[in-house]
Structure formats: C-alpha cells, structure tokens
Image (tube, rainbow, N blue to C red; front, side, top):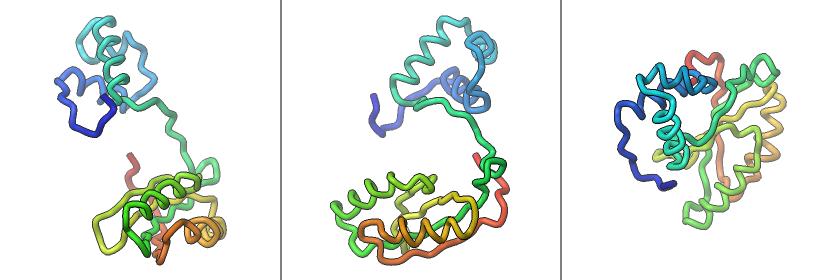
Length: 153
C-alpha cells in the first residue's frame, strides 16, 4: 500500500497499534491476549499492518539526556526559493545532518521547523553555522532553545 492515503482500520487493528506503541516488545501471546484474539489472527494482522506501511518499524526509546544529548533547539528556517527544485534540494540535504532529529515543512511565515539535538549550546552553534546555514537555499534561521521537555511522545 505504501501511499499516504488514509487506511481504514478496525477496532482490533487500532488496539494492536495502541498496545505496540506502548510496548513494542510485547510477545505475540501477550499482544493476542491484550486485543482478545488468538495468536494466529494477530500475527496475520500484524504482518498486514507492517506490509501496508502502517507499522514502519520498531525502535528503542532512548533517554537522550543520559547519553549526553540533552540540548534541544527548534530552528525556524526560511528559504530564499520555494520552488519545487529548491525544496527537493533542501529536503535531500537536511537528511544528511544527524543532529536534525525532525524536519517539518510548515505553513507559516517561515518554511521549515527543525528539531536539533546536540550535546550543548556550543555543539549546536557549530551545527547551525556549519551545517544548517549551509543547506541549499537557506536565507534565514531563528533558534528557540528548549529549557525543559514536559512531554515527549
């Protein structure tokens, strides 16, 4: 399926997704128990959800502060050119900056909002000056530093 159109999910599919979003390491038996089906139909539904791109993968939730990546900045990026080729060039290039955790095209007075994670403000300043500002068609940036994360995920 792998397109961006909305997919119709029934209550059991939604329960599977909710259970896995809370704990992606559930055994098939535990997942089946939580959604009220036996293992075989849950496995079939899970395979379909993966095949259709509803479940894109499984990952560990990492406490970034505990591994020295606690500095978070949000960067508004304004481009000098917003024609399709310029947007494509920016989109491709931003994927190559590992410190950019998220990149969203925004309908606002600026074009993109980036979530950037680094070790500290000095590391952020280097990423901004050497990598983000050098992205194709970047005209202007504004930075907002997160003082505390209240909710994440």
